[in-house]
Length: 160
Image (cartoon, rainbow, N blue to C red; front, top):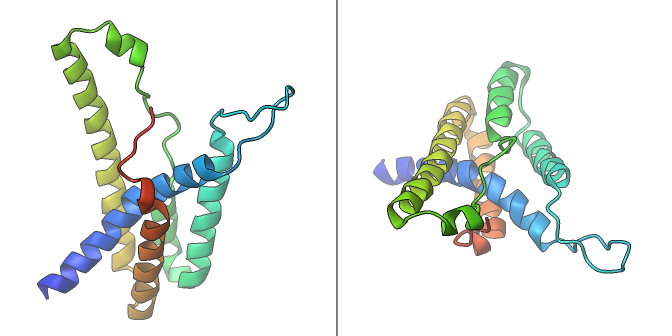
């Protein structure tokens, strides 16, 4: 029983943390657009990331065959999985001007923000997962494991 619970918690954590990471990694691995000078632009395209993320969610919904009775739970889950509108980014220049204790406090605040976001996603995932039937849970587990394999290669890297 413990192993089964661990597997479900791991799947929820994977969806919660990997969905956004997978979308960011997919954008980062895609060939950047070419600018007027013929050089690749390395500018982050948030709208493209959101579009890919929403397509993955739509694919998951279709594979799960979400029923009308599950629609409200799906909507809550999908809304919770949306990338944040704006995440505070690491400002290296500002950090360079801070004292070490201030820099550590700033880094801790960023980490707490990201942890709170992941916790919110994990809770939404568990609530949605509880609404699924046995076959849907198998599909959900398989799909989230696949997301982890795709996005997990770069999970240790954070670019700010």
